[in-house]
Image (cartoon, rainbow, N blue to C red; front, side, top):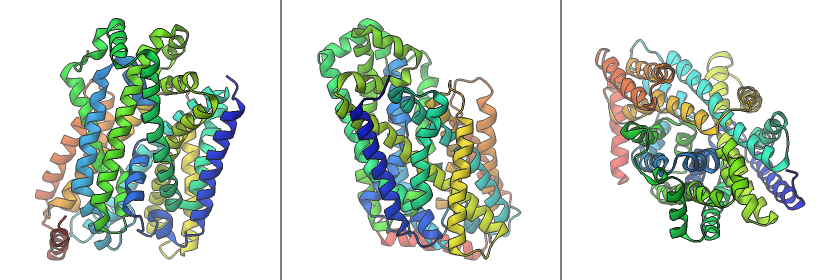
Length: 500
């Protein structure tokens, strides 16, 4: 299709606003701490919506509705698992991680935290090795994760503007890379807040209009049942294994660097409970909307066979097709900008985490330990561009699917980092050897399990194997020295005193 004038105007206004925020954040970015964590200055509202927007990428408006449209309500277990996992992450990880990273030499990145948390425990897994392995895990899986966002953006530009996929890749990534390059963490967090607001508006409005267009909730369910009764069954063709795999998505939250960075950047421990309430409300409503779009899309496409043909080629376009068909071009432009918002919010923070790993954990940690702040910020900007180009290269296949790329990267981080983060926060006996063993075991299990052809999501074996490796590696190595255990006790005391 050829983009209409309203679509061009709404997209143009949105993109200019995001880049404008990037320039505003540039004025507040004075050093690497500002560029990577915004000087730990985020309030509760921005922390909540930034964590949510950076979590819910293009798969929320494309991948998940597409899965519901194709398979039915059994795919909603993914949303349930994510809600449980996100709440546990906010409740049990956010506060301790915020305190611990400040106590461990003001750690700016997850590899930085692992290094300072275990560097003095006297084990064979010294801080340098932990820093290298964790930074490599980030680069490998985030390259895949960034590619999923670029694919989602390319699908949007391909559908809306009629661009060839190869051109749409570059246009979809350009604006995100620009404001991330300019403004760093503050730009990403401020734009996330705007983008999260746009996403929830689109996901609440669209399913309501679609259901009314079909004839109401009862008629929608009747049409779906008439098309295929199996699409309304909670236990689908994959059986209990598929349910467990879907719920296991929730385990991934404990190891996602781009989400954990929001906890680390919170202004104080006191803002975490407020942020949790805001963030979880936003998330539940967005996921309900995404599920409703996918299911209502089945009924709507049944009544409009010509659109069903287009969706048969790529079900992940269901939100785009519904927005274009049911709304006037001005409103459709705003709704489709929500997809771009979802893509940009997650892609930007992923690029920034990759940049921080390369800048802080490799360049500053190994090659230029005395580099000045201005030099580090510019190196960070250069690595954002480099990682973006790598992700575009990975996403070059026009048959790429958003949800497939996201699920692989999500499992990689969840298994490699999730158990390490949890044990490091709550088990004083954990050692650097245990952390290294768990990180390697989790990442390798995900990669190997992916190629077994098993229907069980690789997150499940990866998380279990990593946990076992952490316990075994810690118990087989010397206990941490007294100062490390004393710091752990001080963090626990601070949390108790704050009533967390």
